[in-house]
Length: 56
Image (cartoon, rainbow, N blue to C red; front, side, top):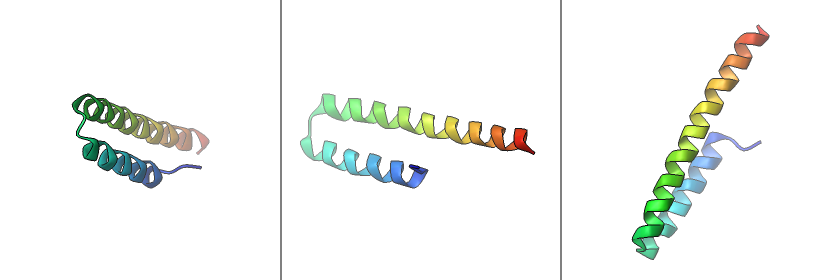
């Protein structure tokens, strides 16, 4: 299972590579992607918490 820290590290790695490219369009898309991934991680955490509460 992939955890938040794995995803966070991947995003940091990709962000660093994108910055080195100095391609403005690529940087913008990577930033957009990073924000979307962050939203998914937050949503996933909320759902896991809801499931945990339902199991109680």
